[in-house]
Image 1 (cartoon, rainbow, N blue to C red):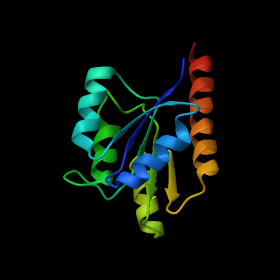
Image 2 (tube, rainbow, N blue to C red):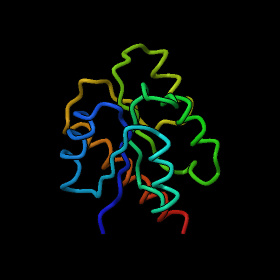
Image 3 (cartoon, rainbow, N blue to C red):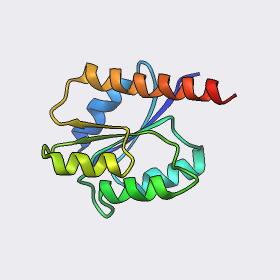
Length: 131
């Protein structure tokens, strides 16, 4: 069974690009804002990884990340932040808030796939060790 990736980005072209890059290996659901993504997760279950932008409408990506990681229901879901913010302060804030990785736009599609694969493989190893 394919692993599930949930993508949140307000840019339609970016959502399309990420979905096309990942859908060969994963089941990919894309959303333009956090509210619809959360509704989807409540209805269809947790994704294996969330890929999110920081600059989002209504709920900022950093706020979403902080809330997600402090919510017991979703805190174990790995998150990859993809952002056009290139400053170290933003990157550090996201990683401290619980992001598993931070990728700056523009990015190499192969690197994104590689990093998601690494996160999923590490999660699989952790689950094996816990059992």
